[in-house]
Image 1 (spheres, helix red, strand yellow):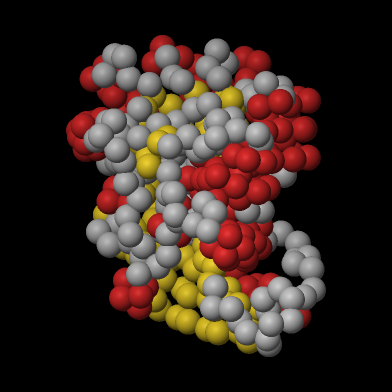
Image 2 (image 1 turned 90 degrees about the vertical axis):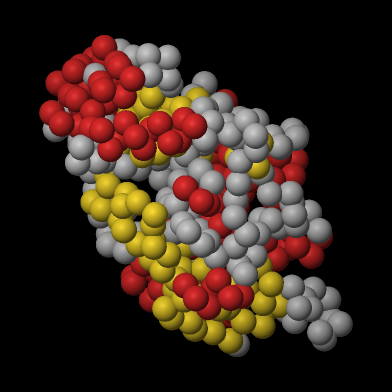
Length: 368
């Protein structure tokens, strides 16, 4: 270390990792059998290393970002800009940008020996929640019996509610009804990922859902407002909420009464915390959604989910529900089925070297 002021950034390292999912994750936008994502580390000359995650999907079916493209943006634009001290000013790559921002935040807080959850809550003048109620997100199944069995497994693990990935198909809607029939008092939500119409929403009204997530396409806030006006079930917005401006537009149009905050899409943990506060000030309910993250991304997102402004159960579940072997020590639930907020410095998790090497399919170090 030079001893001349603040520690200097030495290198940015990119790891492309692939983690097989225990169960295929099927939603309206496609199917994921393998989590193909990017881990980012920043290394300073005082030995401190910070970690972040770019939780893109392998194909650009959910957002315009995808893993191969994000790798190039990180390699050719964001990492060189960071090392040169230039602004991270790329347009349209929030997940890639957030991975760099999160890694820097992790390093700063590790140096200060301060947990991210404590840091974020302090910005709102509050204390973080120690454990966060979870909503088990369950992908589509070919057979109703298989879906009911999957729900039963997550209820046995004490999930507070379940969310079913659906399309407007008759089979999917019937499956939602079957889950309600099996558990009359269970809190159930559904996620259409932008594929619903008014008829499919009305066909679900008898199920008494907690909310319907993203019924209209991401950019169709006017359509979402129309559905919210005609449908008796609360509407949650996910893909539509890309910025504070988009949130303000959704509020002005009454396009939904709930928002799903995803720290990667929002620009990192601090930006996500600001969005939580903004939404609550607007009278909306809030929860933190998931992107099938590894332990790195999940730990960072849990710090946001632990904010008191998050009023609904988080989509973030325990590592063992997704992977046989995560890249970090697993994120777990307590005896009540709530997600335990990491309390170590920074995001509270770092990759285990052997696990990272086993999962890595590419690695690149970018230096000054």
